[in-house]
Length: 197
Length: 188
Image (cartoon, rainbow over all chains, first blue to last red; front, top):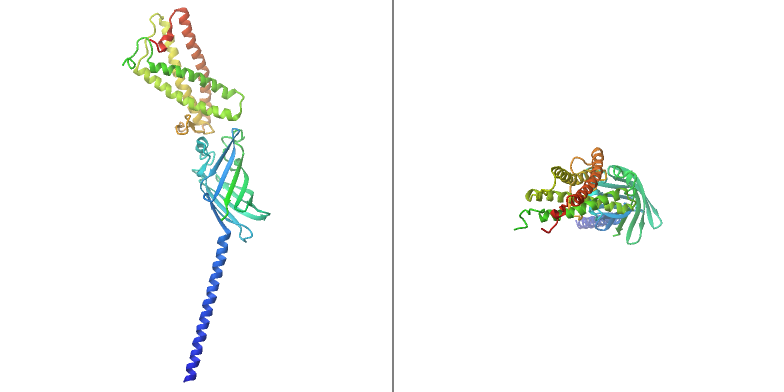
C-alpha cells in the first residue's frame, strides 16, 4: 500500500516537472516570437509629414519655386531585411508652395487634377544596399500615370535622404498649359528627408 | 451739401477724381499691355507684368462701373451752348465710345484670362482678393482667340479715342475759345 503511495507521489512529481518544463518552453517560444516580431517592427520605419519632409521644386518664368506635400505616409523596410520594401502614398491636394497663384493652379485639371486623382503612390520594386545608402527602383503613380523611377536613399545617420528628378510631362502634368516647358520647367526636383527612429 | 448736389458747370467731384485716376490708369494699362506682349524682357518680369495687368484690368472694370453709377446719380453738366449741334453729337458719340471701350476692354481681358490654357487665377494686387473666372469658358480655345483679338482691337481703338478726346479739347480751346477742361477740374 505504501509502495503504491510512493509511486503515485513520484508520478505526480514527474507530471508537475513535465508541466513546468512545458510552461517554460512555451514561455521561451513566446518570448522568441515576440523578439522576432519586435525585430521586424524595429526594422520598419513609419514615416510621414510629422517625422519627415517631402518637398518639390522647379522653375516658373525663370523663378525658382518650392513646395511641400503636407500629408503623406511611407512604410520603409530596408535591407538587410529579406522583404525590403518601400510603400508610400501622398495626398496630392496637400501640396503647398506658399504662393497663392501656384497653390490655386496646382489642383486644377491640367496640373495635379486632384478632383480625379487625389492620391499618389510609390511602391518599390527593388532596394539594393549601396555603400551608405540604398538604390531604390519602383513605380510612381501620379495623376493616373505610372512611371518607373529610381533614386538613391542615403543613410546619413540620423536621417534618410533622397533627391531625384521627376519629369512632369511623363505624368501629363501641365501638358496642355505648357508642353514646351517655356514657362514651367519639365524637371521637378523631389526631395525626401526622414528622421530615423 | 454742395458736394452731393449737381454742380452746374462741372462734373461731380467724385466723377472728376475717378476720371483723372482712370485716365492715368488707362495709359499705364495700355503701355504695360503693349510692352508685356511685345517687349524684350526676362520671363519673370513678363509674368509679373501679366499678373499686375490682370489685377489692374479688374480694378478698371470696377472703376468704370462706379463712374457710370455716379453719372446716373449725378448727371454731368450740359455741353456749352456755344458748341454746334454737330459738335455736340460728335462729343456724345465720342464719350459713349470711350465708356464702351472702358467696359469692353477689361471684359475682353477677363474672358482671355478665364479661357486661357494656363488657368492662372486673378488676384487683385493681394492674395485675399481673388477675382473669379467667367464660368463655362475654361480652356476654350475659340473664346480665348476671340477675346484676345477683341482685346487688341479695343486697345488700339482706345488709343485712337483718347487721342481724339484730347484733340477735341485742344481744338475747341483753339477754334472756339471754349475751355472744356474746366468741366473736369476741381475749381468752380
